[in-house]
Image (cartoon, rainbow over all chains, first blue to last red):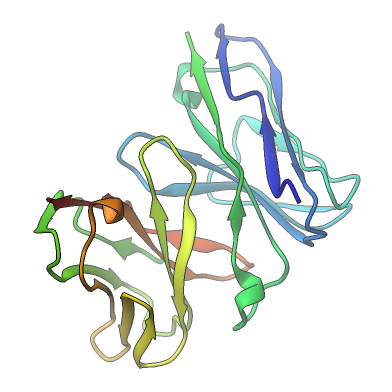
Length: 116
Length: 110
């Protein structure tokens, strides 16, 4: 299993440009998440999904959009990039939520985004 | 608003000693807590989760949960240089979300 994969690894965007960060998992996990991590900070949840066709906002959704048409894929769309969106973006997935080991979130390698 | 607080460090510990990492949380009703390790430039990976008051041991790692005092600890015995990383504490919030602390940077000195 490849686990959680993310592309690209690194991207430079100009202010106002748009892009899609790709995320895919091959573990048949129902739950998927997008986080951003600013230097020296913890993870902030942008959007999450509990299954194909179902998405919801997290703590910091402004400036982003997501879709979940399949169990495997959970792309994150940035519209009109701003310098404040410079960050490292992590995608994660988990099998379920609840007091079990299946709640473990598995992370992709991250995408480093620089907006200039 | 739920919050998870961690000392950012760095916490410097000699090789072979016990490293003690602490995390406090604001929601007295929180039930589930997680410790993730993040090496520099890498993604977080789960070390342990704990749901019940008391201690949970896994190899060199022990997680401690004290709900009355609202803190969670991670002890690393026989610390190795490979344990040098940032340790993130998280609690499970509502709507499937994890609430993350900013992390404590741990340095194990040979």
